[in-house]
Picture 1: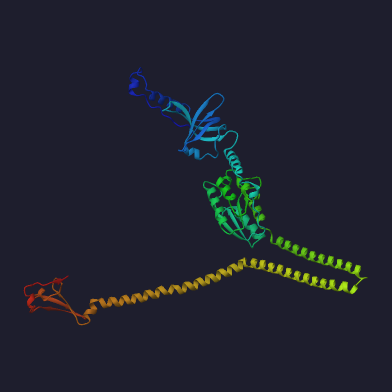
Picture 2: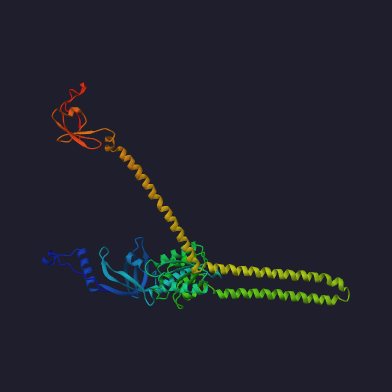
Length: 474
């Protein structure tokens, strides 16, 4: 950073004219400030933070000290807001800023614009500070972890819609368990404001009916992954009612959301593999359970038959007919019950398999395309039906208005035997005979055609004799 250019103002005429005149305190202090700013300017200073305090205005006041000296410092609110860590008393830091004089108190101080922990990166320190704080609150406790469902029907994904992570997740889910429905809540995964978007995307999916949520992004530097270390994102994951699996970065990357999540995966693809078990694996597990049930039933039957055989042999000497008659009937009933139970169980298993197969078929692109095509056809028919109604309504209205207009037309009145007369040459509409005099020309308009005539005689009613000139219309 280039040092600020400070211009020392020229001496006043009074000072140049008489060197013996004393300076005011303000003049001397100002000269000292100009000299310090010009000679020192911007500097890097390493020291131990002391008396760190932030006022309501957002400005921070503190001191940097070493074994022999103390330097007063101030950092204004715009620079404080951009700090990635919280300065603590006793922490060794490197400060960058300019040295100047505070004229009111007459003391020099450092106006800091940047603070960096000495020997430790600001991001790493902020990471450790927030980790200790959230861990003390119990957000990373093992008893908060929720189990991940074995066969989720709806999977929510929080990641960038344009990154490689979403493609990897969708490929894994499509390959391993295509019946699962995926709900994507797109968001930025780095940059200013990305943390707030990620937290909101997690809360949105948590309010939906999803079985598990995957929070993921590809690899990157600590700065690239920093949004997943922000407090708002960690708290959103910890407060989530839905189980959360994280797959952020590579295997060696560990973010704070990994501690708050119910399960951490090393990569986005691994997160998808944890969430979706393979269809073949599910069928193999189900078949193994069926075989185990069959073996258990058969073993139970063999044990009962063996025991019955032993009892039969031991009692055969005493009452053969009485002893064996009841157990044989009981054995037959038990065998029938076992066979019926096995048939019912196998039928239930087959129905479950058929239902799963039906669900898979419903999710196929061919069925979805057919449903969409039928829906489009219905919408097209509806539009064709609805579009004709406004045209008929407007045609009827136009016909009605045309009839009213024709009824009010002067030509229609003339067609019933009336006439209009204008006085010539000024073409004034004649409303009374008083507007005419003998010898004047006039034009008379009939329903069909017009004539020009000359007035020979004007006859007026007696009450109009004194109103010569009459009313005329324009």
